[in-house]
Image 1 (cartoon, rainbow, N blue to C red):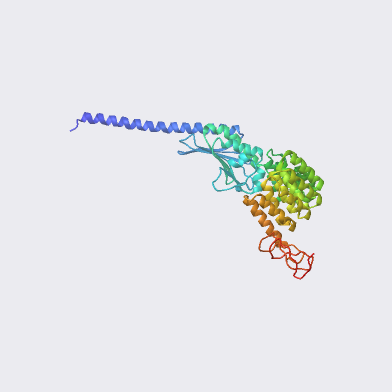
Image 2 (spheres, rainbow, N blue to C red):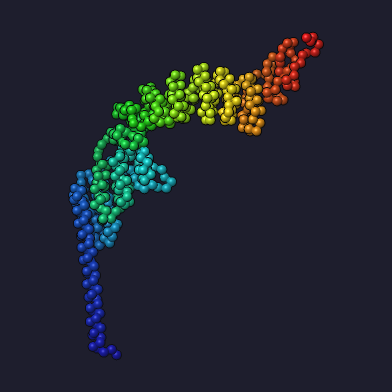
Length: 456
């Protein structure tokens, strides 16, 4: 049996332990309560710095919450009581239609709206009405979103700007969230926002995207017509090119200046192609000479195509010079343009090109002779193949060209050239009236006279 004095001692010890635990629990409670109140004061100070009016500050056993307002903005700050490193800040702008806008980190296999700013487009997935999205995402808004994205997870969904951060980052993040919220709350007309972006955004692709939306969705708006005209003198050749095309006859001068510009090969080439046969021969030749000197190959090719489409004697003569003087892809493009000219005057320079030093030029000439060549091209094509017996490509090109020429010729009759079987390109004779040369299926290259005729 236990001694009664011992039992009493044990009871006292247990009582002391129970009391100590109770005091520890009570101390923990008051400590957590003090920490919660301290955190709320930190939040309230941050709210006051942003000129927010606190309308609610609540502390429960699990969570802390603060609600504040500033004009059209509502701000909520919430966090678990136990963690100062997990904090959610929500700003509600209240802009009509804003609930349809979605901005978040990129989603796999999903392509959002691209505003034209590559760093921004690669950082965020953007969804919603294109006109509203592009109107809202001006240069300063994009800068704010990118700067805040480095300080915690940020997204815009269900009409709210939501950010996850920590107490330590709150003083940095909250002013920027409020700035963003105020920018989203301004009741400015969407069209005017697009116009402003099309005129002032520092990124050319963004200006162009806003311009495209204006022309597509507000074509009759006087502001659209005005900004489109102004775009014809934009600093970016890409924007000027698009504006010049959209302006129609009014944009011809814009395209002419861009075509003759040495600023950018690609956009000059596109301007030449857009003008097409509106370019005179003199203008086209001048741009071609300049492009050849600067080796702007895309512009050179565009000029050659225009000359080929025109098909005039002057254009054919200019193309023939390019084939002779140039090599590689430029000479090939000139030969192709000669074929596109569809003129009988193009045949002699193409026949001459069959002797070009570059094999790819000879192949191109053979193919174009297949398109427009006459019987006069058959023998030069055969000779070109014989000069390069091991070149399979030239052999195939010449054979195909001869076949195409043959298909265009009428059936052989006395005094005509026939390319009929047995072998394409061989000359054969058939019986005809005395003194006439005719071509048929007799052995190639033999001359015969009808029997009984006197020989001289």
